[in-house]
Length: 485
Figure 1 (cartoon, one colour):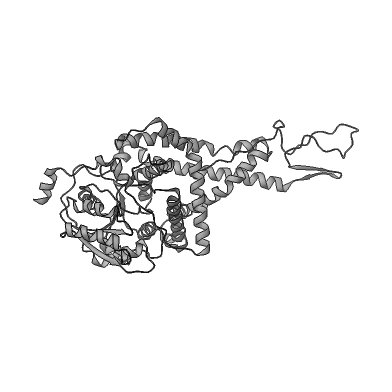
Figure 2 (tube, one colour; figure 1 turned 60 degrees about the horizontal axis):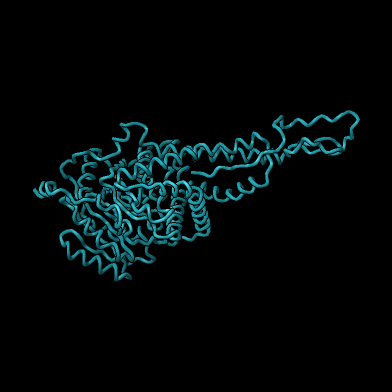
């Protein structure tokens, strides 16, 4: 969503911008033209001169407003893509009855200072009803607390969980994943975060999706759950809802997709052929998706509320700020790396450039917000220009209405009661959250320009396990017996 430019128009009635008021006969020619408060003409003793600077300023203002309108409208279209028809919505989910298992899985779970949440996540993954699952917990050699939790889980599930110690320096997520990849034995490699809540039947449905589509990559759904924790957590939850419920399906259909950070499954031979993840990229999931898309790999997205991976929002604004900075900077790294230029069609390359440059657009919005305020307070512009600056407001208001409807649907799908004050927080938080995102994008641009690329980790406390977890029910006993047979 973008913040529209709102400017005050001139107090003079609308009229032709370049036509001065007639000067009465006999009147002095050096009297200032009272009707010209638009700045387009300057009265001088020698006549009138065309004010090109004013024209350039007004033109830039109008172009900026139209550009923000395009950004807001495309964002709105992506948000609504899955709902364009009943058939589209139904096609985004898993099959009701999965096929018999045909693949083997290796699940990589990197954890750094995750003592509070990692053990329960490994227990959940070990409870998968799929018969062929290897789980690798990846811990740092300088993190004895997390390593102890991982080894306790391996002792509880010796047939499924093993521990790999990451000795890379400096440490980050893609390096940890690459460290564990040589130990993977499954046909398909999946990635989960240390705090994830995963449905026990998920892998059976992922396996079925590979069989049905012949995909190289299957992206499952991820959903933040603790929408009542703070004013920003509500908006963060909705972002995830529209991203995984709709937007990623559009990107997959366009054959260009920045993958989500977890619940993503890639055939191991494709990973090994590409030497794993980019160890220096701050958005290794996006980079891998762009790389595979550029190679023509088939990527399928599947979303079902019953089988989404549940997570928590960052616990503080500072943590969320660092997370968004890292994501934005990662997008800029992928844009600079340029592998998207290998996409086969011009439309794909244009789309890729636009999507990966989004941090620049958000940063520009952040810089222009104070300019907008100044224009509201001080600027006098022609009426037509003032009206045109209101154009971005239309898709912005429609987007807000869609978000309100989306919050209600989220509550129905996940068995959460959405209160009137939740809707109020959603509406009142619109502008502050957009300003916040713009500031994070600005920081990403500055960090990338300075070459600062250290990994800023997001802390986890398990807040999502305090609410909404009742929907993640154990697999039916009949299903377990069927797999065992």
